[in-house]
Amino acid sequence: MIHGPDIVNSFGSHFLLWFAKTNTYSIIDTDFQEILNVYLTSKSQSSFIKSLQVETGFSTTFLKSQYQRIEDYLTTCHTLTDSDTKSPDLIEIEPLANSKYYQIGSKVLEIQYNDQRIQQLFHPLIAHLHINNDLSQPDEHVRIKLAEKKLIMSLNDTLTIQCQTSDYHKIQGKLIMQVINLLHETTDQDWVGLLHASAVSKHKLGILFTGSSGSGKSTLVSLLVSHGFELIADDTVPLRADDSRLYHNPGAVSVKASALSLVSKYWPNESSYTKGLRSKSKGAITYIPMHKDFVKSGADCKYLIKVNYQPNIETEFTEVGLEEVIQEVIRESWISPNAEHAHVFFNWLDKLRFFNLNYSNFKEVIPILEQLTESDR
Amino acid sequence: MKNQKKGITRKEAIKKMGKYAAITAVGTYTILNPLKAQVTSPPDPGGDPLGVGG
Image (cartoon, rainbow over all chains, first blue to last red; front, side):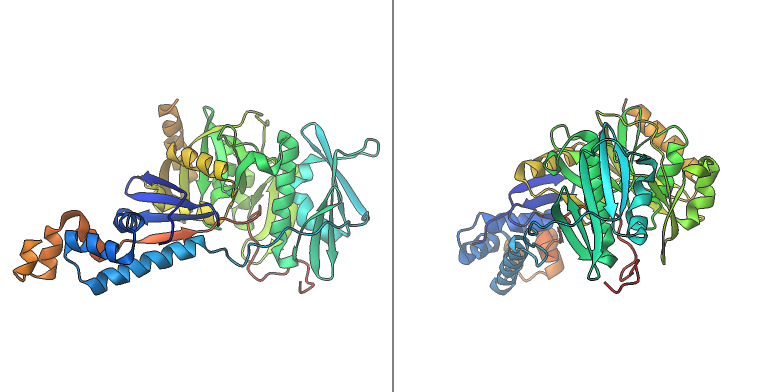
C-alpha cells in the first residue's frame, strides 16, 4: 500500500492535500476523498475491495479499477519530476562593464550587467530605486551576464541561476526575491512563498488578486492604488513564514500597452515611467512605481480574488470555494518545500475567503472592495 | 443493499446507496506542482528577447 498525503485539510466541498517528498499539492472532491480514505485504512487490495463491496455491492472488477486509480494517483503525487534539479555549482562571474546601484530600504545593491540589452531586461522593474553611488561599498552585488546564449546570474560571487534567454523571468524572479530580502532583512528561508499575484491593502487588510496572464490584475491594482488602496506588491507577493502576512515587493507595477492610456490618467507623472521590453502578447511594458510607503509590518491577508477582466461585461463578485481560485496560485508560484512552511500555508489559506470577480469597469469594483474590507474591520 | 439483489436498475441502486453513491462518479482530483524557484510573470512562450536564439 502506498502512503497518503502529509497534510490534509478540508475547504468546504473539497480537500487540499500536500505531499512532502515532492512538494505536491492536490485538490480532491469529497467523492474522491471517501475512496482514498478507504484505501488508506485498508491493509491490502482484497480488504479494500471487501470493505467497499459490503457497503456498496459494487463488482470486484469495478473496485479493482478504483484501487488501481488510487495507486496511480498516489504514485504520481510521490514521484519527483524532471525539473527537480540539483543545486548549481559555485562559480564566479568576473566584474562586468555596466554597473548600477539601487537603494533598497537601508541597503545598497549593486547590479552589474554585461551590456545594455541585458540591463534593459532587469533595470526597468527597479529603476525608481536607482541611485548614483560612487562612494560607499554596496551591501550586496549581483552580476547578470549573457554567455554562450545563456543568461547567468551570480549573487555575491555565487552562481544562483543559469537559464535560456527566453526564460529571463527566472532571473527576474531571483533578482526580485533578493530585493525583497534586502528590504525586509530576510533570507529565502523566511518566506512561505513568492506568490504569482498582486496585492493591495485597505483598512490594514490585505486583498490578493490572482488570475491568468491578461486577466487585468496589474491594471486593477494600478487603479485601486490611485483610489485610496495601498499597494503591497504587483506580480510577485511574498508571504512570510513567522507571521503569515503579505509583505511589500518594492518592484514597480508593470502596465501593458493596452492599459496604459487608462492607467496614465490616474498616474500622470510620466517622468516616473520606465519602458521595458516589447513583448508580442503584452506590447511595450511600462513600469510605474506606485508604492507610497513600505509598511515594514506587512498586511494581514483576508481575501483571495480571482480576477477576470473582459470588455463590456457586468460586474460580478461571487464568494466561491478554494478549488475555484487556488489552482493558478499554486501552479505559478514558488512555494517553499519546507514542511513547517506548508503547515503555515494551509493555516493561512484556512483563514481566507475566496471570490471570483468579473469586471469591465473598475469604478464598480471599488465600492465592492471598500464594503468588503469595511465589514471585516 | 438488499434492493440490488432484487434486480433494480443501476440508477435506483445509486440513489439508495447514500454516501457511497458518489463512488460511481469516482470523484475528481487535481495535482498541482508549485514552481521550484521564484519567477516573475513569464514572457511570451518561445520568445527570445535578446534575439540570440538562447
